[in-house]
Length: 135
Image (cartoon, rainbow, N blue to C red; front, side):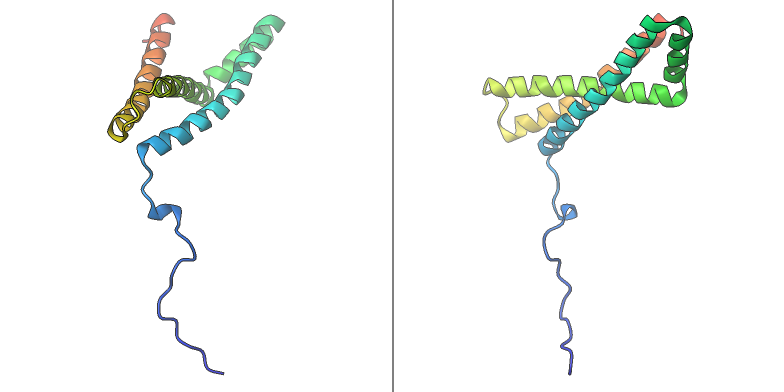
């Protein structure tokens, strides 16, 4: 039995790499992701509060965990997720009023959300280190 030669390899369906994600779609996905991350990050806050209410030794242990490089990285990510989700919520609040729904304006607001969350996170960490005398 003879086989017919394949003329061209074609994908079965379009792949994600074919499309260019608009910034508004990316920020919408990130808003959902950061909302989920805040659930788990809030467990860290609860752990810290429980340690503060339990004993000095347990609080010192939790402080040591949060003070390690991995702990600080997780806390930095948590604070960024908090700022990003807050600004994303404000973006949606503006949209609920009917303002900023034009494509160009929505893209500008989405970029402002991303930049603003980074700036606010860095400012919070600078203020935290300054308050502790660590600058």
